[in-house]
Amino acid sequence: MNRQGSLRWKTNDHFVMAGRCIRHLTRNLDNLLIVIVLPIMMMLLFSSVFGGAIQIGGDENYVNYIVPGILLICIGYSASTTAVSINMDMSQGIIDRFRSMPIAKSAFITGHVIASVFRNIVSTTVSVLAALVLGFSPKASFVEWLIIILILLLYALAMTYLSTIFGLLAKTPEGAGAFGFVMLFLPYVSSAFVPLETLPKALRLFAEHQPITILIEALRSLFASTSSPFIFEAIIWCSGILIVSAFIAGQIFKRKTV
Image (tube, one colour):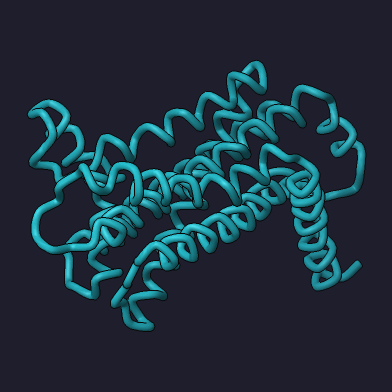
């Protein structure tokens, strides 16, 4: 087989594995609820239930204020399901079957990553549509929308590879699933739902220096079409986490499948 044919064969392996993971998604009610129902419930909960009680100052629409945080919560929680899927494959022996087949070794992780990106595209689309129905009014230009998509895609990939590490290291699927609670919690200790000035001093100090706040402020400024120094920082943070997590996940997978 020539080099071009070999590359096409290996690429096909990755998409075949991704198709397998996506089929599992469509057949799993829990995953469908996370992808479709969670974004809608989050938007309704914060805009309709808490929105009237939380003061953010000024005349800004509260829906506009919370959309970046809800997007990151939904992406993080959706990406965290990858940890459970990978751990189940590793613990149930299916990975040994894959190793005995003439497929690219990297296809296993890449397939899960592609499926996670697909889940997050659906989840993010549902979140934005729900926000628009509830009064979300972004002012972003075409270029700013492209930057928003880039940041969200980098964040989804970073969280997926980080989730992959947990899935490979955890002893049980339940342990792997604990990563989801971490990713669901972090945005709450940030500027996602309330201004940082309203937080107690210790929490405010943590919130001001954690990457989730930087991402939220970057997205918020892009949606409002205003300049912000956080945009470049957000891209750097996501890219750094993605590169480090992808490398570590690859090394752990190699060690566990020797």
